[in-house]
Structure formats: C-alpha cells, structure tokens
Image (cartoon, rainbow, N blue to C red; front, side, top):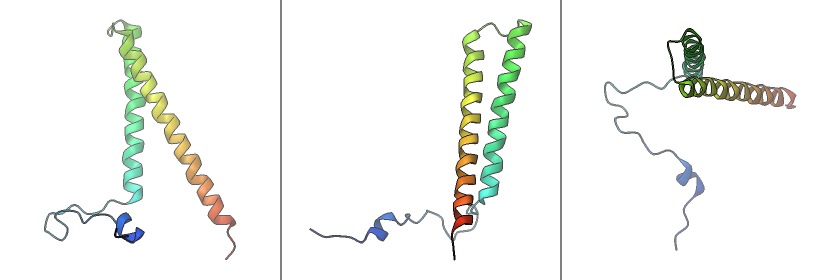
Length: 98
C-alpha cells in the first residue's frame, strides 16, 4: 500500500485551458460577492413583483407566490449568516497578537 502526501491530494487539479488564449481570468472575491448580492436582490424583487401581481389578480397560483417569497427569505437569511461569519472572522483576526 502506498501512502500519498496529504498536500498532493488536496491540491486542485489543473484546469483545462490554463495558459491558453481566451482562458477566463480568475474573478476577485469582490466580483463574486457583488454578483451574489445582485442575485439575492433579484430574488427579493421577483418575490415583491409576484406578491403585487397576486394582489392585483394577475397571478392566480398562490403556490408560486409563496415559493418566490420563501426563496427570497432563504437567500436573505443565508446572506446575513455569511456576513455574520465574515465579521466574526475579521474580529478574530483583529484580536490576534503578533
């Protein structure tokens, strides 16, 4: 039986097309965060539009309205939890003594 180094097992596999022209550049954390916040905002807007449509009588399926509202609520809860974890991590790093 052969034992491999843990680092080699955890290292990411090289992506196809690395170094080739037209390869996608790595995205920054800020770009990913902005994209995900935009998605949460879109879910919130969709839920609001569905509710307004339901109240106006345009949307007749109450299940769709409830589903949109629940998706928006869960996305917002996840966003708040991620924010809380990031703040906790920042505070922990700030408390570290050098």
